Amino acid sequence: MEIRQLRYFLCIAELRNISKSSERLHVAQPALSRQMRQLEDELGVPLFVRGARGVELTEGGLALVPMAAEVIERTEIIAASFRVRSRARAHNLTIGMPEALGRATLPRILDRFKAHYPDAVLHVKVGFSATIRKWILDSEVDVGILYAPPLYEPLMEIQPLFSESLVLIGPGAEAQCLRGFAPPGAIEFAQLACMPLILANLENGVRRTLDRVASDIGITLKPIMEVDNFSLLTEMVLQGRGFTVLTASSVNDELKAGRLRAWQIKSPSVELTIAMATLKIRQPSRPTDTLIDILLQDLREAPTMLSRT
Image (tube, rainbow, N blue to C red):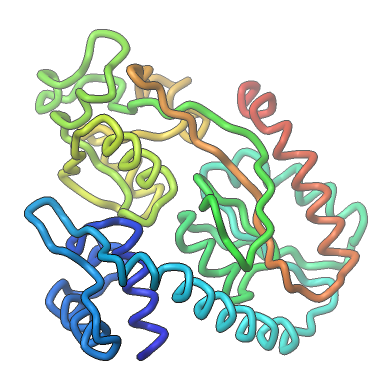
């Protein structure tokens, strides 16, 4: 039995779908199914009942979930502990942030941090939430800002900062190919299933939030394109190649200039939670604690700051 197999099993147990698990894990579906058959053979019990709409856990599968989670948690704690010990950086800190939020908030954060530590170097890594989460767990960043943080993360301390509504975003001047799709006013969530959407992949925080709501109301979102870069994603929308779903503040400049347009989403409306995350096991550091305090104060005021920009 391998740790990798237990990770695969927990992903399938969460999504109840082999195909979606294959996409999230970046593992070919036949290879994933083969790994699960090997795990079942080794344990001597079936773990899933496969059906037309997905999979359901057997009694053995349900029993394995908490045991697999505990094994993985202990393994990651050991690995994280040694990664932290191997890092001995003085006042040089690294923060991971989504690009849109960083553009609006980083100048003030940097100024406040440098007022305390003028000789320090603050490194900034930009990425989607799934990438930032991995950077945190791999000790590549000291502090990370996440969209739609996981409800349970055994190795991380997660502190919610604020929430913001998601809206449909499209080109300001209707592109010819999108005229039949542009809604006259607010749009119902279910209508997204019929629109040419450009979204990030399944691991992105906004995408996970959208897919969860879609599943709750019984629809499936099928984007025409998946783009794992914020600037490129918004450029595709600016060119009239489709619509996307983001927070209004993330494209505030484009909205004010009329290059993009936003539509409220209703029935249901969707709130995106933004949170700060750090490793629970980390070296005590005054600069890190100072940076955390600055982030907590500034980003909890972010809705007000963003509305002024």
